[in-house]
Image (tube, rainbow, N blue to C red; front, side, top):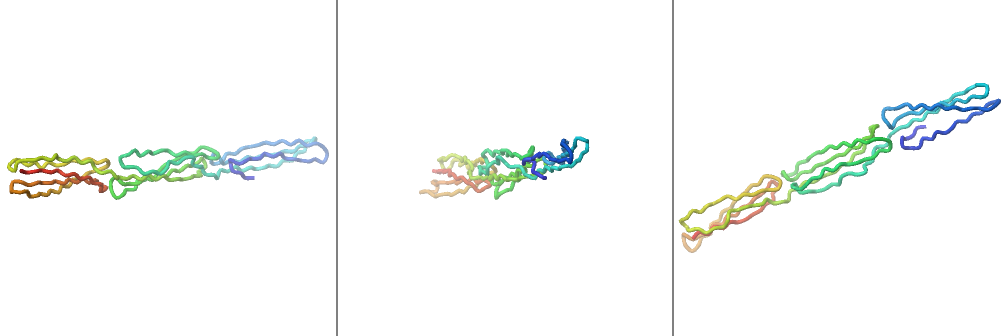
Length: 220
C-alpha cells in the first residue's frame, strides 16, 4: 500500500499453512530512504518455514509519501499606518504533518502617488522537506495624512519710515520634503503712510497635506 507520512501505517502479520505440520513465520523489515524525510519505502520480507526446513518467502512493499503542504499557524495581519509610525514586520509561523518547515518572505514595495504613500506586500512561503509549499500574503498600507508643522514670523507694527523685515517661515514634516508658499496682500489705510501687509504662508508636503498661517504687519 501507499500512505501519507502522517497516516497510519499498519504492520499486519502474514499467515501460512503447511501440508504436514507447524509453520514459523519470520519477517525482516528494511527501510529505504527517499528524496526527503517524508518519502521512504518499507519492505517486509516474510518467510514461512515448516518443521522440515521447507520455506516460502514473499515481500510486502509499503510506500510512504509526503504530499501535504505545511499549514500556517499565524500570519501577520494586514494593517494601515501613518508613514511616521512604527511599521512592525512580524514573522509568520507554520507546522507540517511530517517534518521541519522553512518560511521565506519576499517583500515588495509599491510606490503611491507621493513619497509618504506606499504599499508593502509580504509574501510568506512555508516549505517542508519534500518541497510542498503554502503561501500567504500580508499587505501593509502606508499613508501620509499629517500636515507639516509651520513656524512663521511674528506680527509687528512699524513706523512707515522704519525697516519692514520680510522674514521667511520654516516648516517640518513627518515624512518628506515641504514647500512653503507665501501670498502677500497690502490693505490701504486712511493715508499713504498707514497700511497693513498680510503674509499668508502655506506649507505643503509631498502628499498635499497643508498648513497655513498668517503674519500681519501694521505700518503706521
